[in-house]
Length: 100
Length: 143
Image 1 (cartoon, chains in turn cyan, red):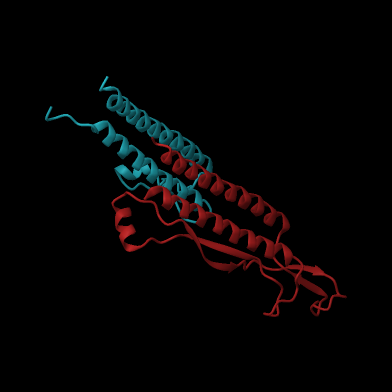
Image 2 (spheres, one colour):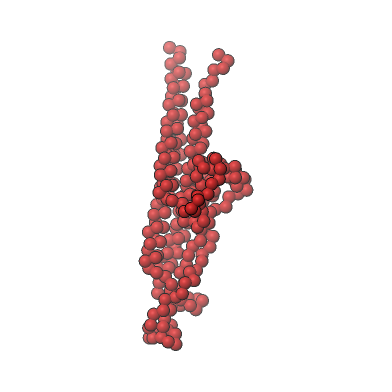
């Protein structure tokens, strides 16, 4: 069993996903904090991952969109946390029940 | 560290809205002030906000598209240079030779609209703060 891994790539991917959601949270917080800042056009994490894009019409921050992103990001985050938790629970079961 | 940074950013947003509230309070309190230390009527104060600059290391990481900025900060207070309102009131001690008194260029309706907007923005920042707090608490519940 040389290639057996306790923590497989799913763990690694979930870790990355949680990390991304944390950063998204900071960016959404930054956008909402700057909702009243003249000339600030916002940071969209998905867009930033590709390239730095400015809004064409320069509308600045749309607070409704940011609040929606916030809710979405929180749900994503809890989903990842639940997945990690259940993965760990599966491992626990394997580790503790294996001797029977 | 994304989540801890998000807390600081939300706090900067709360501070900014509080600064704006102070300006609105000052403008409304001085809506009838005809004498200031500069010898003219009170001029409406306008807060100027800017995106918080980040440290070099953070800026570098940000350029690599991985980090948010440092929130928002108050960079200065400007004065509204629109003309004063002139009201005919020859009995007033600050009336000019023609009997007109200059009143501050503060508009009550404008200030009250700003006030509503500012309190909504304050609430938005509180919502983000609470959401971040819940995320951090959830993380601690991983078995």
